[in-house]
Length: 238
Image 1 (tube, helix red, strand yellow):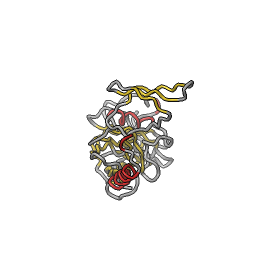
Image 2 (cartoon, rainbow, N blue to C red; image 1 turned 135 degrees about the vertical axis):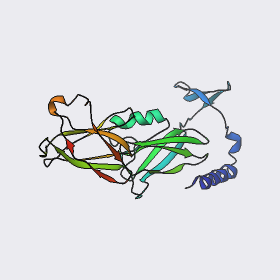
Image 3 (spheres, rainbow, N blue to C red; image 1 turned 135 degrees about the horizontal axis):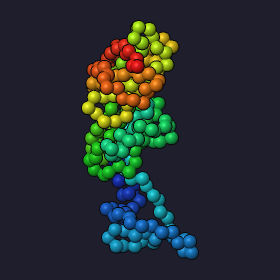
Image 4 (cartoon, helix red, strand yellow; image 1 turned 45 degrees about the vertical axis):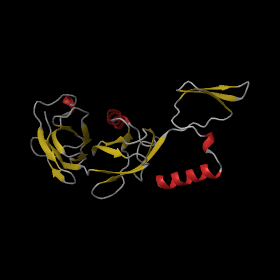
């Protein structure tokens, strides 16, 4: 249910069963200890108060549910990462395995992010092929929809100096002026390769196996545009 409906229901329950006298807001818990002998919790609050309770229910705090889609087609995006911190989000997608993490979008493009700040806050959603989106979340909002830019596609063949296709060649793509990991792809038996990246200007090269780890002195530069396919044949280096 939307947040206003949920709040209305909770207020109704609190009034009907006279629960407000047992509710304390704006209390930050600093410690909680379980005492086996008395079978109760000893809870310390930031203002110095100590409470003894038979039960303690721990909550992850504010939970935000999100849906990530392609801004052009509306199709759900799988494998995008949602985080509170821009730097943390950028690190996560580099080596993140699919599945098992609620902050990674599933096949339906959905994610769950807990421990969000109360009030207005900002989330960051990042995808290797689509870049990063900064999402402003209003106070009290617990459902967000994020539209990410359609990536640009780069397709072509890897060929040798004579123009013949080169199978199983490594093609590297690196954004000009942006520090970060390179993207790579292997060419097919026909020499065809395919890559997807956010719009921007990139350096492209296809080194020989002997110089696979070397950075080229020169590389072809190409401009990728959102939602468009750019065709480029790459001559394999020496």
